[in-house]
Image 1 (cartoon, rainbow, N blue to C red):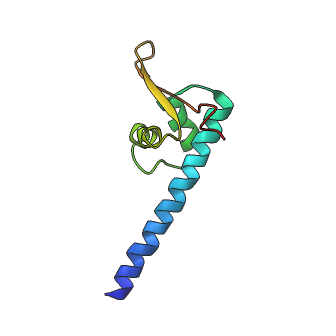
Image 2 (tube, rainbow, N blue to C red):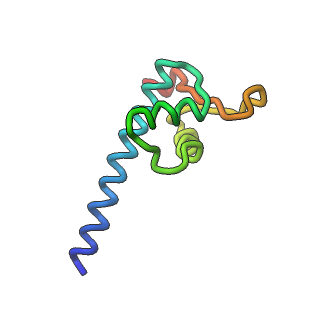
Length: 90
């Protein structure tokens, strides 16, 4: 039973490390590009052979709720636009 418990704890740590890495990649991308659509961010992350822990839009929404990035729905593009504000990049 302890081996199984260790495995779950170990696996959760791997997921957290991966999530932290994706957060940094998303922030770097947005700092460089400015505003970006959800599919642009997903394409960038996938191009690095990485994957967001959740569906991309859900992951980005979590970052928005935690004030890591900013975002709003754009009727013009029919998708969400995301960016890093000056206060979030410090």
